[in-house]
Amino acid sequence: MTAAHARRLFGTDGIRAVAGEFPLDANTIFACGLALGHSLRNSVPGSFPKVLLGRDTRESSPWIAAMLAAGLRETGTRVESAGVVPTPAVAFLARTHGFQAGVVISASHNPWQDNGIKLFGGDGFKLADAVELAMEEEILHHASRSVAPDPATLIPVEDNAALPADYIQFLLSCVPGLRLKGLRIVADCANGAAAAVAPELFRRLGGDVILDNIAPNGRNINLDCGALHPAYVAAEVTVRGADLGLTFDGDADRCMLAGSHNNVINGDAILLMVARDLKVRGLLTGDLVVATTMSNMGLEAALRRSGIKMLRAPVGDRYVLEEMQKHNAALGGEQSGHILLPHLATTGDGLLTALVVLDLVARTNKGIDELTEDLKVFPQVIVNVKVREKRPLEEIPPVAAAIHAAEAELKDTGRVVIRYSGTEALARVMIEAESEEAMKRHAEAIAGAIRAELGV
Image (cartoon, rainbow, N blue to C red; front, side, top):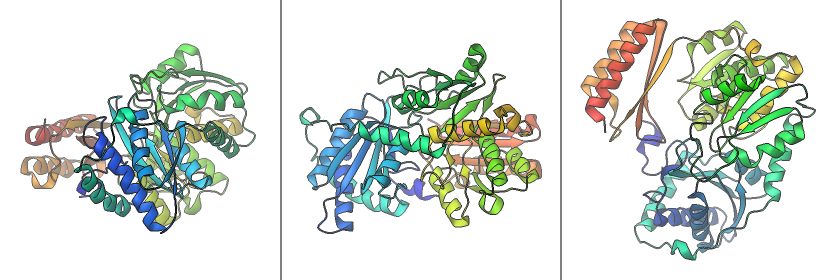
């Protein structure tokens, strides 16, 4: 069982739940501000720390930010806001503007009813598991005492417009000389945080960039668009006669692509093309890439043909980063489009990933379809099962038997990865196999066993 499963509040990417319900009720949010403020004050006794807030476009984000700020101020912590910005913008700004921590109010790819709290240290990295775990006890203690102020009395934190502008300048500095002249691009901003910065970013890069889903209304974030629905931008690329498409999730820390043939290009393919480019330029330390247990065996084979080794980490960009730091890797990421480039940023950044790919296309004069044409993926299926609890699967005989049967049959011709989501009440069943029939059969057998034992 991972640390994420042992926690009561924090998952693999912060606290996430339906806004207004535990643990995103007013008391718990206020208590989170208290706990973070106390943690920062205790780390440097006598100090008055400064915390940066950022948020996405959900209708609940402003009041959650205000409630969290109230808890922080109660401890003597100063609070500033960057407004609606991508999650990686908060990580960058916290690190470069002297903040002791950064907090993002977002539920990433989840529907609008959900929201979340993600925490970054002053170094721009997500807080360590041990720090979050220690904070949990104080949060739960304060939350039980009903100490939160009336939400109607809260004063919103004033947004500093200069901070998003600094983030845009940082993105441009990562790809000096990039110009998009001659390229026609569709960019789907998912009615999320990317919508706040993408128009100015792409205006300054030139080219013919068609921006879609840049009119958030508080409830349309990720709605049939964005990185969770990449078929949308793939179809738009075809309709608009574009060269390629970009699509981001709600908080813009991940990016997926679309080629010119109504095809989706996921994080595995992005890792492949970027890894080869870094290797050619002598920037791929150790000729090594860190992916996850969900990455396709086809990626591993394609990288091997290019003389690049692939290591697998548990799902979650914090675990990918840990493995990268252990091996001094220059590139890592997830199939979902979280790409980590530590020589440029401390966390996954969808807009940065997009610019790195566009820079590669511009320098090589090759399209993304050509750059990934030899990636032959094994058939893969992912079945999500809603669960009422997250019991260890190996302790449930029917589930364990179904998993064992799949592993015994597939052996070296496939993979079986079963895990609980760190952000939702789901069990994810992933089967990959040379035989599509065997893949589907075992996926349904395992999913059926989980549904029978743990299903909602």
